[in-house]
Length: 138
Image (tube, rainbow, N blue to C red):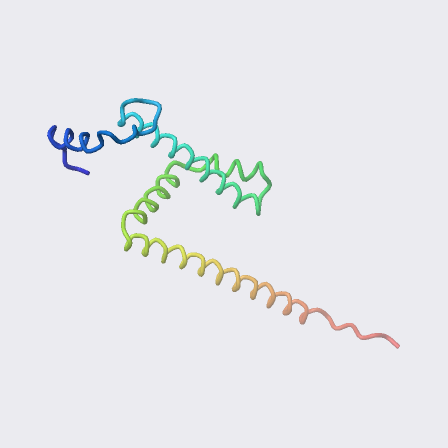
């Protein structure tokens, strides 16, 4: 909500809650509880994100290298990832654009790998064909 509530509106909403059980939280101030919940969720999300990133990297690299890759990422790369994620999260068209970009990148990488493997196989076959033919001596 970007609009500021009037005192009367705040009082009306509080009266509506009268008689209902108190909201859970460590503080009597609901704004403080909301701030604490936000901080805890962001910390948990950060741990989860770091864990997933390291898990993906550990399939290809040893654990120490995977940790170093995640820990030494530049601020520009991190800000770029945050900006793209925020863009995707804010709207359905944004999510569609980002999703299409991700699928496109995966398809590009897959095709690039296939082409590289095809070239490698062609090179091996051409080298094999260029070798001198050895005939058994009788």
